[in-house]
Each structure stands twice: as C-alpha cells, then as structure tokens.
Image (tube, rainbow, N blue to C red; front, top):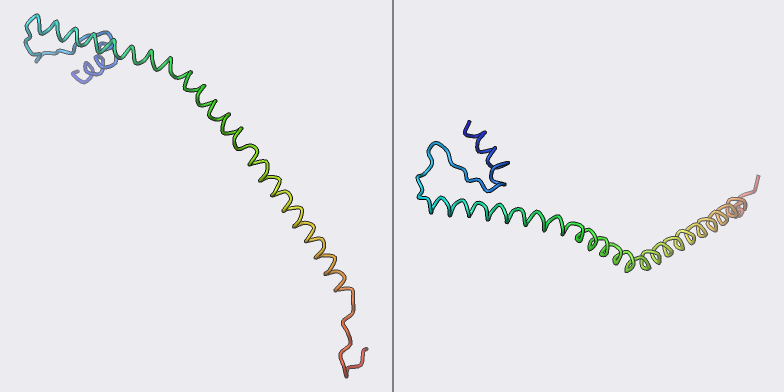
Length: 122
C-alpha cells in the first residue's frame, strides 16, 4: 500500500503542491507545516515553468537545427558536386582504358605468332 501511495503522490499529488505525509509523519508546528507547503508549491511552480519553457524552446530548437542543416548543405554542396564529377570522370577514363585494352588484346590475338627459326611452319 505504501508503494502505491508513494507512486500516486509522485505522479499526481506533488504536481499540485501537496506534501507527502503518512502514518509515521513527523509532528510540525503550524509555521513549519506552512513553510513546507509553500516550498512544495514553489517546487510545483518551478516544474510548471520548466515545462512551459521546454515547450517554447523545442520549436526554436527545431528551427535552429534546420538552419544548421541548410548551412552545412550550402557549404559542402559544391565540394560534393566536384567530387562526384571527379569520380564520374575517373570512371569514364577507366572505361576508355578498358576499351583500348580490349582492342589491343584483340589485335594481338588475331596476329599469328612469328615463326621460330629453324622450325618449319605447318
């Protein structure tokens, strides 16, 4: 039961400035009890302020993050495009070299080997 009460207090009651006291509660003077209650209310207000600030900051954070992404894209787009162009040029050169090599190999294969000295051709 105590665990359930603790859970209920932490999820519900503390949000409204209620203090947690139970069967073994300490005895407080009215001034002490009032001070604790005021402290609990201050904590509740601070938590509400934090939540409000967080909800206001998240959209701004998203805008800042998008600005950073846009800036990085602008900054590096030219470099990326140049690298892509270089890779495409290298690929074209490799294809050209492969074609020339294929032509050379085919011309070598078509030529009969030179006759060896002292051997009669068939």
